[in-house]
Image (cartoon, rainbow, N blue to C red; front, side, top):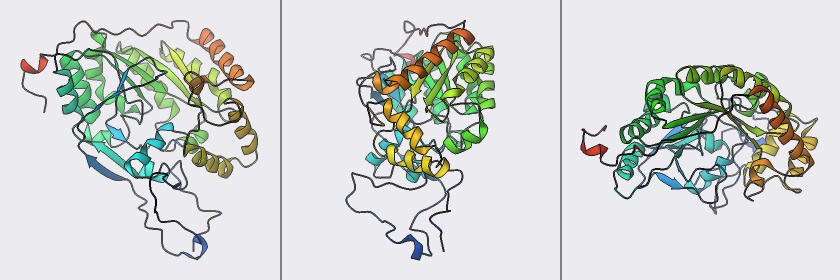
Length: 356
């Protein structure tokens, strides 16, 4: 019989499926201590193929300075327990918890749709974020190569693209990225939350190691691909003290810019993270929770522009200062991101056979 006090899904961030607010009825375990069979849940990863009609998302009220994003995948097997994108899984009829990590929605025609958009004479080229929601280089990408196809479309039409990832799989595409970089069409941010591997396995269990991510920065910059580090999310009481170490290692690896985000527990992520926090750090759970809350005027999530990124208050300000001091010390070669848009050619598809 299952013991609900000791059962822990190793290799997963979330430890349960919170209720989806958009679904009226669902299976629940009212008395798990008397259930011998699993509750109709598949523990392996399930790939769900879909064929959307559009692929470019217009970002409203954005904090990242980009107007559009493209997400080839919904859900993410990396299993980062803090991920704000978990809530988007509810719109697909799934839970933001284990479902988010186990049910990966694949947009099979993403590259074809992107090429269709670029071929419109009215399309105005602006840097597009890839992905911004879930990681475009999560494990299934190794087999499907949808992200690689998207990069090829950008190169074909000479369209700027910005990438954020925490997976070393990006090195597979270093050939395409190098060509894009030669035309000032690409910038990469590598997301790193710390240097402690034991903590990484708890926070984001199926991601590349921190050491390997630093190596990615080094290899990309050596190929002339502009690369920075995203220290996110910063969780007070969990990894905030790691900021100087991450910045130092990223700077030595060649990172030319850095950004940060304080953890924001919006929607169902609040319950998922609190459950994780209590199970893994019962001795400091209350202190960590209170510090997160203090960054958002007594809440753990805030949708206000700018505040939702850097928070406010004493704790948030101390984190910001530590970040700025570390950046000034270890990243003296910091540069602004520059993209080329003048070479975009919407007629590129007329000059050669389709990539597909």
